[in-house]
Length: 134
Image 1 (spheres, rainbow, N blue to C red):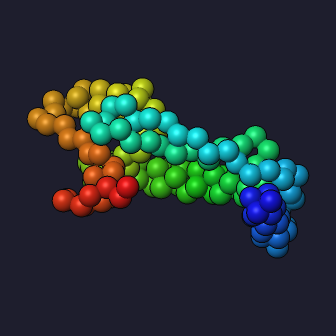
Image 2: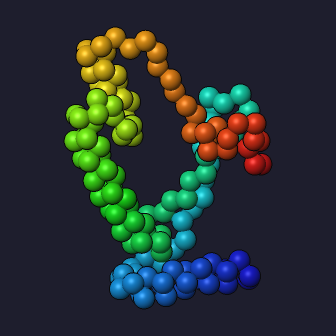
């Protein structure tokens, strides 16, 4: 059927692309697509996730993840160093709620904050007054 041919075509493209980059291909399946409901939103939205244990894009994703982690760590080290001289931190990426609370506690130990602001990434990305694409 055409669905199976399309799947093999995508996998073939993954293999060809990874072969050009010298990446060994072991797994030859496409990821599964599933959705998690964002129950905290007024309007029900879904967060779509593509995942697969034996996904053909897995080797490339692993390489990309390691590059992004290295980049993130480099920026974090640089910004942590410079924040000592600026008295302002420009690095605000939190890996989990505990590290975020720890940062807030440290700030409050230095000086009591007069305000705290949080931003919804989606609203920042779309900009004011722009509707979410359906």
